[in-house]
Length: 371
Image 1 (cartoon, rainbow, N blue to C red):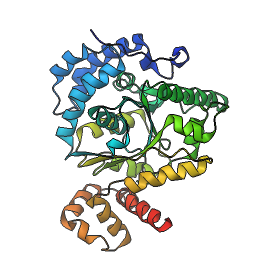
Image 2 (spheres, rainbow, N blue to C red):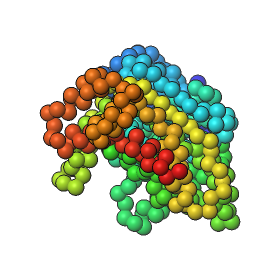
Image 3 (cartoon, one colour):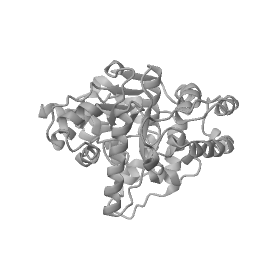
Image 4 (spheres, one colour):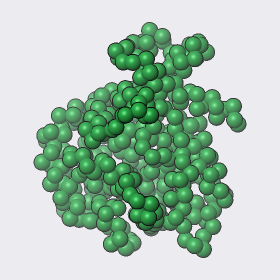
């Protein structure tokens, strides 16, 4: 009999924001996902579809889905077939039985939060719910997955008044989920994936989160209650790197992202090689801040300092700068072969692609200079 995992707070106001809390949404999403499994399975090499189907029948909540289907079947299969290793650093900075607010850089639409959740569950930590954009719910085969993975859905295309109301609701949900111990929450430090390889944490994200603070609470008290943990997520290779380079090169032109592009990026990230992957969790932020801008900069600096740099990053940095400063960290022949795939593209797109891999080194250098 599936276990229905219910929160210990009033969920009635969160039906649209957190559809995963409601049993009818779970049943509907399971039905859709099972019917879409043959199509979805074409993109999941290394995963046993018949076993997944049997496991899906045991799902009664998003927590069941995490434990039974996602982290016992899907994620191990994906890592085996499309990565060269998965490393987790700093997992002991998170205590079992406690909930946290994880704020990270954002490189991959689905995998960032999925792999973080996988790392936490494997270490016996609390489940984590991702905060995701409503644009993903428009993608047929992805929508039920977002519900079943515990997604908290935000609509970024609202009028100012409605956007404020939604932000207030989201901040209170984050506060309720973490304070009650129901779950941890993951949110990206900025709006959307990084397309240029520069990782930032926007103060606007922190200001939204602080709306959940009780009037009687100081900022320090609230930070102590929600326990912010900066997280750095690093992929050696990004399957969507060319798509991102094209978007960056045309961001001031007539480039318009389509729904099909979102789906294409997600499927590429699931199937294609990502090389080595590293997730680094820092210690929880000390609750002694009284300025949100300073807090955002501190979290950003921590994410940059813990970001794992790979040979391809050093090669790209040297290539962009016409130097050999990091020549001892890579093999030129193997690195140049990787960038052959962009030869048919314009010079502008090729440079954006190269900068995507070079910029993490530049960010680390700038951080070191500023310290």
